[in-house]
Image 1 (cartoon, rainbow, N blue to C red):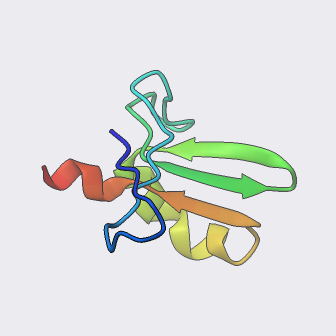
Image 2 (image 1 turned 180 degrees about the vertical axis):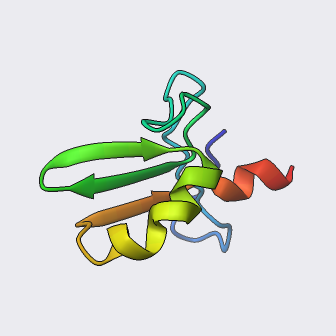
Length: 72
């Protein structure tokens, strides 16, 4: 679910772009993290995203994390 707001509102805009169709490249579970490395997008579940985060963040050009969705 994406919450949209007008520029005059003080609401948080949530950018959820990963869906249940997006799967972890390591194990096939639902992906909650997307990292762009060398022009390719890598998708990870929360577990594998955390496992590889330290190494990937040093070379990734972008890091998109939606793991807060697991708290609901």
